Length: 148
Image (cartoon, rainbow, N blue to C red; front, side):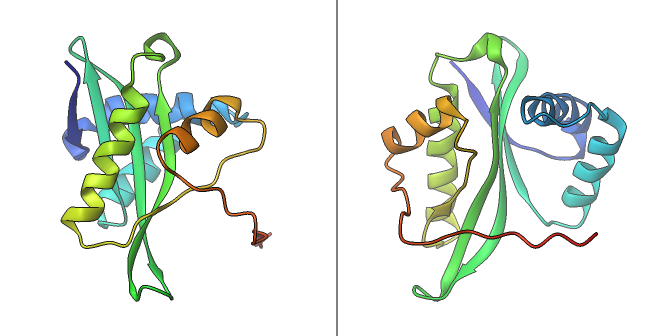
């Protein structure tokens, strides 16, 4: 039975390894130490809430949430920024368990819901999210501005 815990500084090494694997999945260069420093800063500043899932006495995945606020509901909304399960542990419902825990966290924090985005090439995610009751927003275009 998988166990889900809120990530703290005590989990930093294991969380950083998973986060590095996640970044590699999205074709970013491996940089364990930089990712670890990033996560440490997020946890120390209470910028994020992350859930780690443990299977077979090993952390094998995470969901990483950031707070937003929604103009229609006038409530907090959580951005499900990052979701990752070690490929060796996929197909056992762990990603669904992390999403369900994130939904429960919305209830606990009186948030209106979860927002997420994923690349169009993320075949697994694009099949998973509708199964977990996410609705695709086809009315809006999302744009990014990047400081150079």
